[in-house]
Image (cartoon, helix red, strand yellow):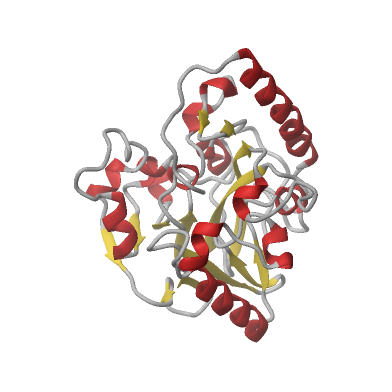
Length: 306
C-alpha cells in the first residue's frame, strides 16, 4: 500500500463517492463470516478465553480492517478485470510450541466506531469494525504474551497497532528499519510504531527461521518497500502457506501478471518470481491478505488453521 498524506475536508460529491464505496465494503465484510474448524473450542464470552496450549503450529487470521478503494488502475488493472476493488486488511497470529509470532498489526484500533469520512488517506477510506486487541483476547492472547512481532512492511495499514506490541522481540529488516526511523521524517509519520524504537530488536537477513525447526520462516521480498518481507508457515494438516504482505494486493495481479507501474523498476518482479518458485517447490498456497475473496472465505479467529 502506498503512503499518502492526510487529505483536507471533502466536498459533498466526494462524500457521496465514499458512501458508495462504503456500501460495497459493507457487503464484503458481511460476507466474511467466521467458520469454525474441527477442534475449535465453543464460543466464550469476549476476553475470557484461556491461552491454548499447542503441540503443533497454528495460524489465526485476524480482521484488521477494510480499505474502501476505487482505483485498481493504480495496480495495473482495469475495473472490469477485478472482482472487487476494495481491500481487506488481514493480520496473522502464529502459535508455535515455542512461542507466538504476530505478523502485521493492521489499521489502528482507534478507527473503530469512527465515520470513514474522517479516515481517508490518498483515496483509501479506512473501515475498522473490530479491534486487534479484542480478537486476540478472544483466543487468550494479551500483548505481553506475544513473543515476536514481524511486519511485512511499514505502511500505515500494516503497522496501525504496532506500539501495543513493542514489548515483543521485533524481527526487523535493516532496510525497512532505516525507512521507518529515517532522519527528517514528517512529524507524526511514525506515530503508530514509534515505540518500536525501544523494542528488543533482532535484525534479520535472508530467510529467517523464527523457531529453528523450519516451520515458520520470514522470507525477504523487497520491492514494494526496501525491507518488505513475507511469511512462510508449514502446517500439519493445511500444508505450507505463504502470507504475501503487499507482494500482491489483488489476486488478479497474480493471474494476469500485473503490478503497480512504479514497482516494475524495483525488486518486486524478482521477489514475485522467487516466491512463485518457492510455492512450486514446497507445494504451498499463497495467501493474499488484501484480497476480499481470501478474507471472505478464510477461517477467522477464534477459528484457526493447523
